[in-house]
Length: 64
Figure (tube, rainbow, N blue to C red):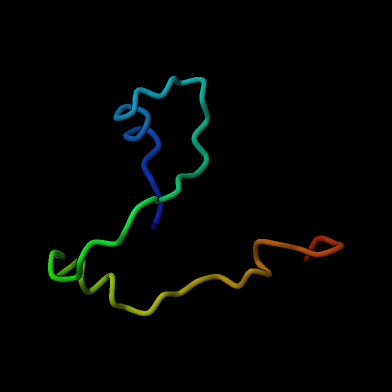
């Protein structure tokens, strides 16, 4: 998931403004490939590029 629109999500789910939305988690099953549009299929099949865990987590000390 590339991100989420907090305002749209807040409106869709009637989430009060005093609740901070920091992240979302996708739950469910992927759609069958033959149901995707050409653009969705291209996005789904391209190689994933993920940041190394070392950019998010540290052991014993903060990284510089």
